[in-house]
Image: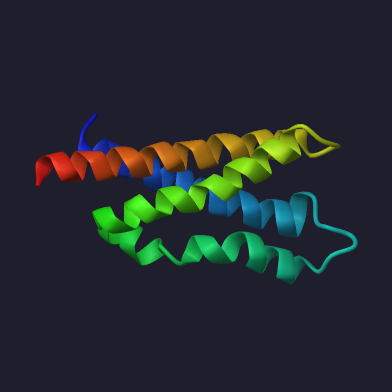
Length: 114
C-alpha cells in the first residue's frame, strides 16, 4: 500500500472513531448516571490532541497516535463482551484497529520514503 492509502485509512479510522463517540455519547445511548459532557471530554478529548499533525501528515504524530488508539481497542473489547452495547463496542473496536493500522502503515511508508 502507498503512503496516501495509509493516510486515508488513518483519517477514516480517526474520524469514524470520533464520530462514533460523539453520536453514541450524545444521542444513541447516552449515560444516565454520568454527565454526558464529562464522558464526551474523557473519550473524545484525547483524540483531538493529534488532529493537526494527522491532517498535515506528520509521521511522528502518526507514530504516537498509534499508541493513542490502544485504549480505544481495550474499551471496544470491554463493551463488545458486556451488556447491551455490543454493537457499539464492536464498531469502536474495528474503527480503533483501522486507526491503529493506518498510523503504523503510514509511519512505516514515510520512513521507507525518507
